[in-house]
Every structure is written in C-alpha cells, then in structure tokens.
Length: 445
Image 1 (spheres, helix red, strand yellow):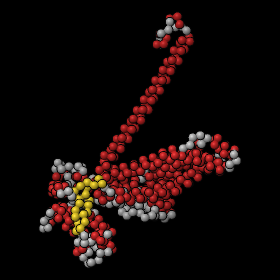
Image 2 (cartoon, helix red, strand yellow; image 1 turned 180 degrees about the horizontal axis):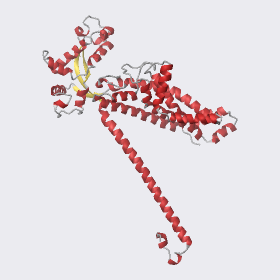
Image 3 (cartoon, helix red, strand yellow; image 1 turned 135 degrees about the horizontal axis):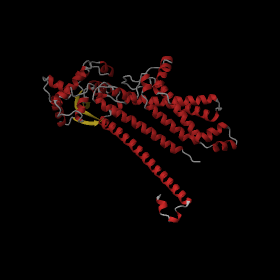
Image 4 (spheres, helix red, strand yellow; image 1 turned 60 degrees about the horizontal axis):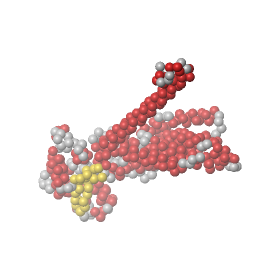
C-alpha cells in the first residue's frame, strides 16, 4: 500500500481512481528522482573535468613560470680598442668578421676585476667563466657591431648565466645534494655566493624568451622566431580560408541544387573535417614542396597546409550559421523585390556573421596548435634569424615546443612549459576575440 493511499479513509481504498492517482504520483516521483540524479551526474562530470583542467594547467604553470625569470650576472666591461679593434678598423663588418676569442678576453678581464681573481690563477678564471653562458661572447660582438661607438668606453652589461647556474638559483639544483650528484660544484657555489654579496648576480625578467630564436644553449633560447613564423602562417590561413570557406558555404547552402552531387560534396566535406592532420601534412609535402617546389620550412607552405585543415571546419560552421537564419528573413527579402544574391548578402549573411566569425577564429585557433602537418613539411628547422617574409625559413610555436621537449638538458624543461603557457595565452586570446565578435555582431529577430 502506498503512502498516499494509507492517508485515505478505509471506505475509499477500493476506489479505482484513488489507485490510479497513486500510480501517477509514484511515476512523477520516479521521474523527479531520475532528473535529480541526472543533474547530479552532470554536475559531477563537469566538476571532474574542471579538476583535470586545473591539474593540467597547474602542472604546466608550476614547471614553466620560472622560465619568465632569468639569472643575470652584471659586470663592467671595458671595450678596450687594443682588444676589440687591434688593427684600428672599428666598422661593423670588421667586428663581425674578426676573431671571436678577443671578446672572450673582454669577458675574462671583467670577471677578474669583478671577482678579484689573480691573473695567474687560470683555474679560478676558468671556473668563473663556467658561470657565464657560452653565448656571452657573441652577444658582445653583436653589441659592438650594432653600436661601434662602444669601442673605447666602459659599460655595464648583463650577461646570461648558464642553465645550470640558473637552475641552482631557482632551487631546481639543491646545494644539500652531494657534489657528485649535482652539476654545480662547490667551487662554483663559492663564486655564486661572492657574486650575490657584491650584487652582481640577480634574477631579471627574461626578455630573451620572447625575442631570441633557436639556440643549443637553453639560457639563450627563445620563441621570438616561432612567434613571427606562427603570425605569418595565421595571416596566410586567414587570407585564404575565410573567403574560400565562406564563399563555398554560401554556394552550398543557398545556391547549389539539391542533388546527388551536392550530397556527395557535403559528405566529403564532413569526412575531411575528421581526417587526421598528419594526412594534410603528407598532402602539403607532395603538392606544395615536391610538385610546386615552394621553399621548405617556409611559413607560406605551413599556412597553405593549415588552410587545408581549417577549410572543412569553417565551411561546416558557416553553413550551420546560415541555416540558423529563419526562412522568414529570406522570404521578406524576396518579397520586397530583392534578388537571391541581394537577399543572401544584404540580409542572411549579416545575421549569420557572428557564427561565421566564431567558426573562423576557432578554426584558426585549432590550426595554431597543429604540430604533425608542420613536422611533415620540415618546419622544425634550427632557425636563429627572424624571417623577413613568409617565404623565408621559419618555425612555429607547436614545433618549437616539440623540439624543446626532446632536448636532454634540464633547463629546456621549463622552457617547454613556458612555451606551452604562451601558446595557451594565444589560444585563450583568440577564443576571447571570438566571443567578443559574436556579441558585437549578434542580432535578435
């Protein structure tokens, strides 16, 4: 006997209407309970997903935030003309073509003065030189080549410390570990403490992470070239995929006759959206490089390949946006005497623009994170100089992350996580732009 029936008088317990009401009440309670369980399952799923995302982001940030700071060693450098320009030629060409060892002599002289090292103590000088990055001498040479007036003057210069010294300062390498088990030796720790006491060693914002190119030395490596290469690729993708994707969508949705050929095209577009991206890389390698003979590792080729991967997504999202416009808009346009094309471009497309822009930016964000097709066309080259045009050799952020992740040095681990953070910031920025554009162009009918 149910709870509802137990509350009724005994004379009415046999009434069939009462029994039917009790069964309906039981059914409602079961449906409400099922709804509550479904809400609980949905909330639990969302909570678990958020927890996994927080763990992922927390792991990346905890490993990469230290890369935005870099250990610097500040010293006074005497650009002695007898060392820098012994032949008297102070031109930039002479500086760049001269012996690089003379800049090592400048650094050695600065270290001797800063740490008060005996000129006859060669071992002590070599130990001190081990604290500085091997890119210090090329950095001095570039400074003088860019500004020959430095010759004959004394300037304070911030040198990069080696990756091991940087890891020691940041606590990754601990001093309480036995000397045989760490890369920083006790003699180096003594020199580091002395530099700290003199105020010559400090942590500073790592501008080189955003301005430098590829380097075998982790302390000198940066994503500057990769950022420029990714920018060129996104420009190529935007210029090609947006007009082609929107034009194709408008034709298929508004003008194309409904027959087996258009059905076949629609099926193929949906299939292309699910094709693994590495297949597009093979296609780009065969068509753009081997057949068209476009330059390998160029941003142009990367942009063309990513355009192929992005077009199906843009076409599908644009068609969905066009289909979401009510038929009454089309009928109203045709009713006032507008042609089919005028109706589409003056009435339908403006109302579908939020969805079109959102799909395009999401497609670009997806293309920005692609790695496999770029590896197939050779965009993992060791590029130090900035590409001047999309035809010059370049790399991209995803491939730069891949290359750093394969490096054995400890300092490249934080560089890899820092590059992932930069890539995530770009993706978040692009998705935020999509949301802003959707709200800006959104219209209600």
